[in-house]
Length: 114
Length: 114
View 1 (spheres, chains in turn orange, green):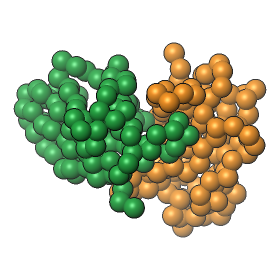
View 2 (spheres, each protein chain N blue to C red):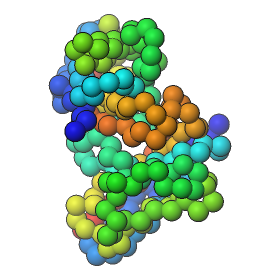
View 3 (spheres, rainbow over the protein chains, first blue to last red):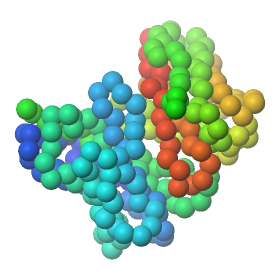
């Protein structure tokens, strides 16, 4: 079965530390990849997505992710986190096509200490 | 542009009671999704509509859950009768139409079944 795994369930960092959240997927073919974020008390919102082209994807708020096909990975990175990055982060994947559904990881809870 | 609207935001019911949730997607968005998000997990797709037709309801517990999108705009999700394990946040999301379009999420309805 298709699945998405996120390696860390809880991450605690100090401000200005670098962040890398792992995400692996189990699709064998072409895949579309997403990172969503949910700030406390707010909606889920898209951070960035990969469909094709440059495997290094830039998102909002200084986040980026790199698609490494050989490793089935799509890790999220930020060079210097801020307290306002405290949130739940979800990785999701889907096979191409209009009606394919997103498969979600369990999420990573990030707490950034000021 | 108005976002995805959901109501109510919170609902507390006793087991075996019924409950209904309402979603109004972003204007013009053809695709509408209902997700169930249990605490500590990623969203799980319950049902996907394309206009007023069901595209995927493979994970909808049809013995107790039902959903409709009669005019291809707003949608309702109903649970009857509710069980304790239905306690979760119910998220509605919508997408314009193309596979590369972003899914936009509503604030969710937090359901507690006692």
